[in-house]
Image (cartoon, rainbow, N blue to C red; front, side, top):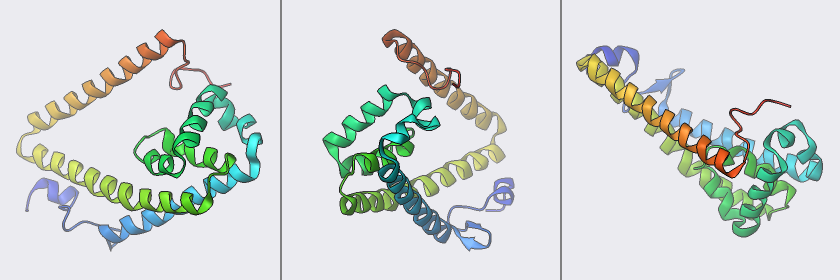
Length: 180
């Protein structure tokens, strides 16, 4: 494909980063994420309740942390796997699982399965979407701009709906609330 898009970013079948094939970069990224999840678990397990009084715990709020605790208490290691697919939960659930002392062997299995499924889908999926958008931009810049505007409108609508729901329930908005 000899287009302007190919000069910016190679096709998904020919992609490389730092001279390494994209599949190898994905594998290394998955291993790094798996390692980070293990660190999160052990930090939560080691610090226990002190973690809730930290800056992160204060920023999230005890109510939100208790919601995560209920999810972990109900679903256990399955919640660890599912948290990969929920953006904010991905960063809070692992250390809460450590605080609640979820069975570590099951935690390892769930976090390994999460890394094995989420990382490739995200890496190749996002890469393909970006490459496709650039290919569209080379054929029709107007259509690419329209797609970008439409995506921005959808994101803005989702944010507005979520903020209105939070205001209706009296729950503070993480994005709009001031830092302590």
